[in-house]
Image (tube, rainbow, N blue to C red; front, side, top):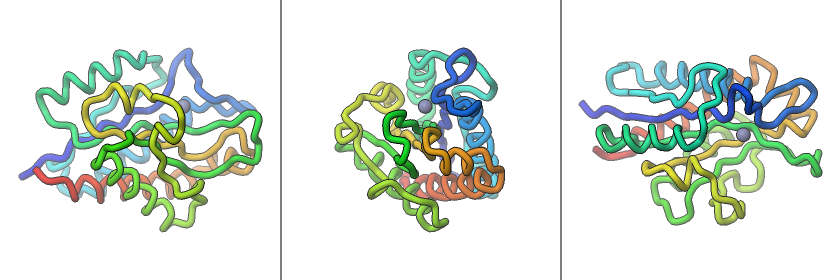
Length: 198
Ligand SMILES: [Zn+2]
């Protein structure tokens, strides 16, 4: 029986809150949504022995990026990790109207592209607002992201919604919205994992 392995990386934590608007801290939402994705993935996999989820943090801790990607790369040398999914919320302080869901991946990565498009497709099916076509290479973004560029396995970074946008922020703290979003992201990740050979 093939074991599918996915790393869920909940962005920021501890002294590093990430984006912060109106008392809402990105690090807390990343952990809350991440825990829901974790649960949803286990429900989708049904037989849990076929799925192994590796976490880089599971509490309000500041784990430096360098430690996170070293852990991932060392683990990957022993047991192949099929996908790294880093969970974040976005912010555009100077563009408060910017909103919606977006996934980043490495240019030229066939598996990264497949994972990103699968996640976007499932999130779109649940009628969430997708920013542009929803998936974007880090070259198109114009930034290198450690969890994508420093990690050996295929990786995506999910920007779930904009905390700098009032409507997105109200959604992001809503438990029903979180549940539905987590379910959609988990479905996209699981569909990708099932499509991976070996
Ligand atoms: Zn972030």
